[in-house]
Image (tube, rainbow, N blue to C red):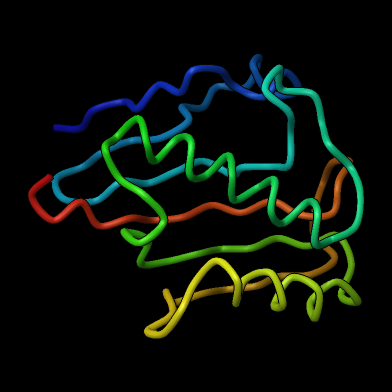
Length: 128
């Protein structure tokens, strides 16, 4: 069995997609891709640093609905529009996470929408 994690909103760009913000399955929580957007779901475009912070704020918000925070993340998948953004992404990533870092996959040149970044995560709830 699994439980859908409903956020307080979904990004306005993606409300028509057949997806859930998050799913809890056992002790794990899986989040759909999160982008940099404001409280109304409008895209917030800017530097890779700005968009990385915005995307992880949305990750934090959805995880909060499951009673979790960023420290519960065990895996991050990052999708960047441009390969040149990897260094800027890594800079902010080091602000958000510390060792031991979550496992991570980073793909560049594969973002199919406006914006510079999307991230999806897996978090471990560990009995929460």
